[in-house]
Amino acid sequence: MSLEASELILNEDGSIYHLGLLPEELANTIITVGDPARVPKISAHFDSIEIKKQKREFCTHTGVYKGKKITVMSTGMGTDNIDIALTELDALVNIDLKAKKIKNKLTSLDIIRIGTTGSIRKEIPVGSYILSEFALGFDGLMHYYKDDSFLRKDIAEAFVEQTGWSTKKAFPYVVEGGKELINKLSSDKTIQGFTGTNVGFYGPQGRVLRAEVPDPEMNDKIAAFAYKRYSVTNLEMETSGIYGISKLLGHNAASMNLVLANRATGEFLENASEMMEELILYTLDKIVQ
Ligand SMILES: O=P(O)(O)O[C@H]1O[C@H](CO)[C@@H](O)[C@H]1O
Ligand SMILES: O=c1cc[nH]c(=O)[nH]1
Image (cartoon, rainbow, N blue to C red):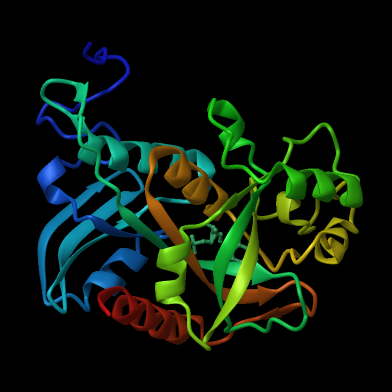
């Protein structure tokens, strides 16, 4: 049975709806970033760039770095965008777009996020690289999919109990990243992370400029959470969706984040662009190793 035109949506040129990409324009190793301006900063290191496409916040460059074909794509901010980006990346490799049928032989992509984050622990300073072993999703995205077999419900339940998580918010979910890919990217430069993914940057991450939050102690409660060997290291806005949709669809994902802010000490990284450039080169070289 083929997928309806309203479900698998293609543009007039046959490309996938939001990303605007054709299957042959994608590599099997994909770097995702939130900020579209970070895409050319990464592809500037490529030996050659074959594809440059932009639709909405999804800017994509595909090229070759040290002999390996890599795609770098921006997702914009938030897991609502991640749902679109990862589902369409999967469709590009695992659905025959002309026949609109799921392929018999499925392809597993390597998806590596290079992002920015805020640490909630004073011992993880600005400038650190956090490589997420697990993600803790506050966004609720994975509750919209049937298969929850890979979610660590024991950790999520302990988290809700210890922090007094409000029932008005989505029930948190916990998902592990792709172990092999994470091992490949890790070194003594990376800190193993348990990354909280929020639905926003201000209130959802406990930032107060003018509008108050219901529980000003929530970041401290998140930092105090301890269950078995698990405790939360940092907050950002995409990793849980990337890990969740990747596990759901059979892809390998790793999330590497530069710590820009330390929420416990109030510091913000001064030389952020220089440090991001270093993280980009670190990650690219680990990918091709
Ligand atoms: O730097 P990026 O990859 O966008 O990631 C972080 O920065 C944005 C917030 O400033 C959010 O997307 C957050 O996850
Ligand atoms: O504190 C921070 C810094 C970067 N990105 C976030 O989402 N939060």
